[in-house]
Length: 110
Image (cartoon, rainbow, N blue to C red; front, side, top):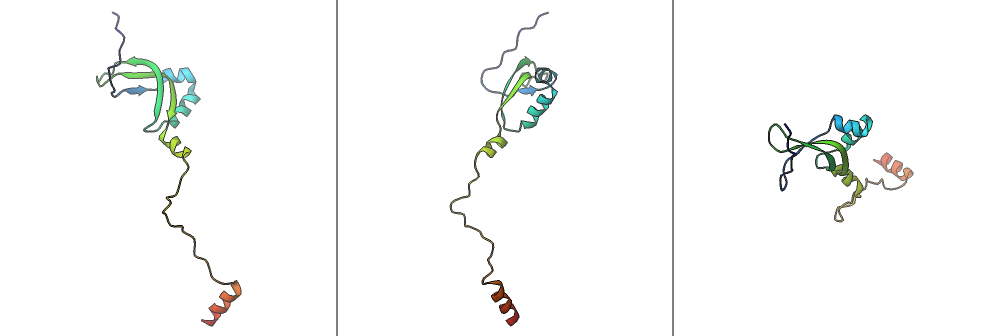
């Protein structure tokens, strides 16, 4: 019995990305671990693989053999220089007034 190929439903939906043996065989174990460590919630990925029917019928699964991180919230935040608000007051530590000698004289007079 032959099965017909899965087609992605029109529009957007929830897909489960499965990164396992196929991906490790494609890029090697060290590289697979390195790429997965960089993935964060909100990351934009490009994945290539085969579709597989999800047993819960919530949408198809993509069994990845290639995975590329296009953008990550953490990486994007590091690229942008941190700017202080222009209306923020400048905070400086308190400065001691006078020279060490005048401070000693004032302290001994008290």
